Length: 231
Image (cartoon, rainbow, N blue to C red; front, side):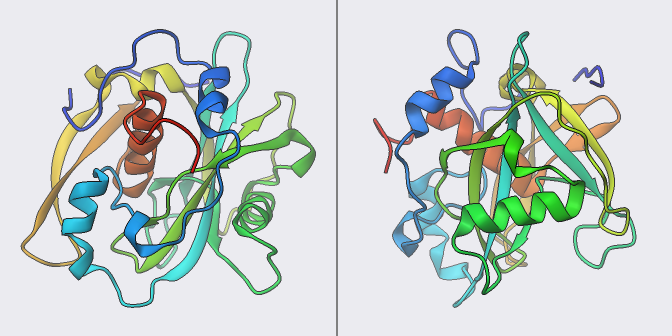
């Protein structure tokens, strides 16, 4: 695990310990939410996302990512990848394993598990799906379903070097701490409309963009800011 050091108003601070039990209590029983009225812009509230809906692509391509939370005794970490620097899209960025949902995928969870195995060799026997965050729509033109999962320690990874340069873990408590989140403004979909997303520096890495936004969504869910239960 890499040591990190790094305030943002984009996400609240959690009261109490960050535990997988707490996340499971919020997400157990949740289902994918594909309805346009539920779509989120990464890191934005539902109200703000609805204000931005007119800028969404007409038919965003369905995709899924695995949000892998590793169940360490000392506290959960989030498993992240750094994309290959020669890729056409999002080269060198920190991301979750995932990609476009293919016809052979039974559902978003199947797509996320397939992509995680293809990209980093994570075997399904170590993965227990906890639940789903609302679909996120970003500048890439994809509608992404985040599949939140508990990962049992002890896995071996085999990185597909054409897609991924590196895999690392960051403590979830660190990621969720607002003191480690640095707000940055972005242009949305090439418009003049600006949104604020955090950068989360961690060691030599910078977690930002849609990945940081999805982590903010997960944090808000844990704080009870996305409703009182699974949807």
